[in-house]
Image (cartoon, rainbow, N blue to C red; front, top):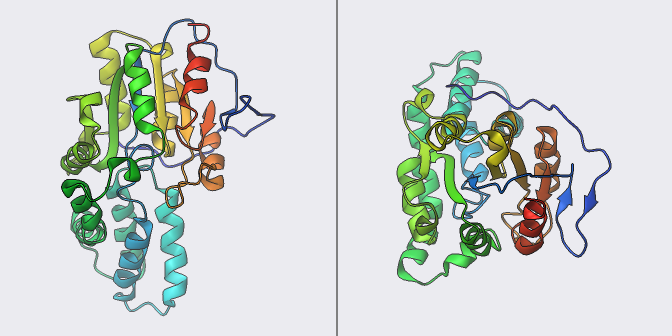
Length: 291
């Protein structure tokens, strides 16, 4: 199942903050039953291990585009690459590499298989983040330092309320599982951790949601989703669920919502926007108040 490109379907009208919190209500949520199946994105929503990935992907693309012999400057190419990289953020990484291949061909170059480009990117990204992973493995860094603030408290609160937790990522599944282990997240999800595979059409977040519905025999009203990418927000809303946009400030962990993410995720129908999970208690109280 192919993942659709970003398409704005709504805009924020008058919004409000829950008193004493950073929780922005875009449209009021009234649930008649507890949201007992909860889907999370991974990178940027829970994990910060891969923070800074665009600073790896965009320069790589500039190098490859320059090899076509284009007369565009490195600065021009960086702007072009950054635009489509961020426009496709939230989809599986392979979609950005498919676009890169298209850009190479447009400049008269011979494109490689997008999986080849994905491997180059991944090798470079791993060099950037391997020290972070090693610090987690050895205990030099606490997992909390590489999690969106409040993530563990939020997961614990949901589990205590009997919710079944699922994780669906655009990152390759083997690395999602490794990094979930390093961050202490695996006990919350068990085997319900899903990530990208080379046969990208055989995996999507929408397929994960459909499988939840079929296996658990529930409808969308029982589904709650958290994500900092448009794909999971769009998929949860399309399924009839409640979508919470995590507009995380990945680099600064400031507790302030990232303005670009906020606008982007409201545009695909997010019901609620949060900067992180530090206000987990009023959020859970709000969502469960009538259920």
